[in-house]
Length: 376
Image 1: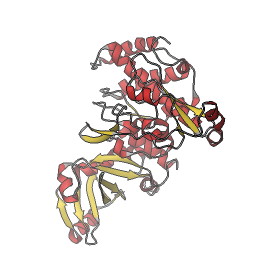
Image 2: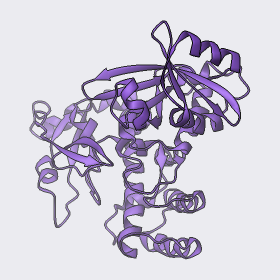
Image 3: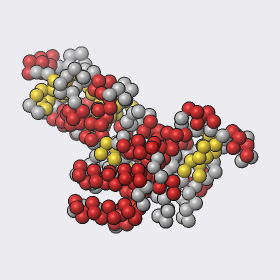
Image 4: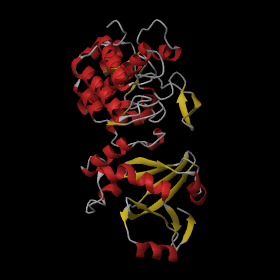
């Protein structure tokens, strides 16, 4: 293909299609609203702030995966979508359309390829992976230095440096058997490279990115997709669409119990009484969601918005037994949630251990027994 995307992307690829289909569509204002591994669970277009606009772009990317749409054809659709929605996007038309097309297809194919490479029979026959540089005319020096390197499939390198490793990166891995190693004149896999990391500020958060990798690409798309968990530290802002999708699949028993999704960020008024940093993640686990199946209100749509409302508006009370609870009115009904705060060197974590409907008498009792730490 003249646009530099590999010819393999012209062909339907079931695993890549499944990866893309599993995503929840979310609206955003900035590219940092959904960051790194969270892209394995959420489809977004930076600055696309309406469901209809995101939906139209999603339809075109799916068409490209299923039918092999070219970049030129996608640009025609891009022009129609922009005109129809009156979207005032950043960047020139050619640059922006290529970014959307190229990044979504490359990550989908990377995830699909990872799914194939990690099948048990494949891993048994091909326990090594080789890094292949794209051969671009203006290579990144780190990518070029990794070209031809063979590592075990479980080497930590692949967790942060599984390609693509940046915007327009065309690098890719290939499976290598023990016999292939011998043919290359190798007695075993190459030494795992010592990766150096740099600190970057993204959406108000400090992230660590390996040198040679663009910020936002320091993850393995397929690993994040197949791990059956949502790494909340990768999500700079909670997205209702992603939360609803997580709740839906949790109720279908498709997430292990310790999996969780970020549902809110702690506001200033809660940070001090909870002894956490402003903007710390509030998390909801699959187990908590499943524990409420007998309650009529416990729908995916409820979980998509209720936890954030509780955090933003709720009254924080410390009970006599030292436990923390939030309670607030949601759609005119009183709700309460138990909280667990975990302090870690890499950042504070807050978990909603329960989220249930209550009544005025229980709230009054809670206030009598406990200590109100913050107002509504």
